[in-house]
Image (cartoon, rainbow, N blue to C red; front, side, top):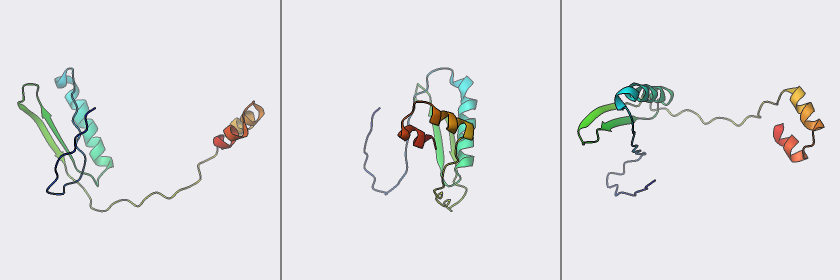
Amino acid sequence: MRVQKLPNPGKAHGTELSVVIEGQWTHYRAYLLRYLRQIAVITPYAQFAFRHVTADGAPGVAMTFARRTDVMPTPPQQVRRAGLWPGLQRSARGAEMSEDQVEWLR
């Protein structure tokens, strides 16, 4: 993996990811585009841009998934994790486990 820090005079922010996909692009294209559409639906506060460039440098598919909202979701409140099934807790206590392991299971 190669990490580069580039000049940013316009103060843009975000992440750019470049991936090389080997194989039958014509076959997997539909799967990748469907996945990106699903990501855009579950993260309406983000903007995604996808650009496919062929091996010979010719332009390919280009799609932009625009931000659908400007309101960020509220951060989740910390809640206590649901306990394990009571039978499993009893069997864990009866087995040879340290107290730390039993506490972790709770």
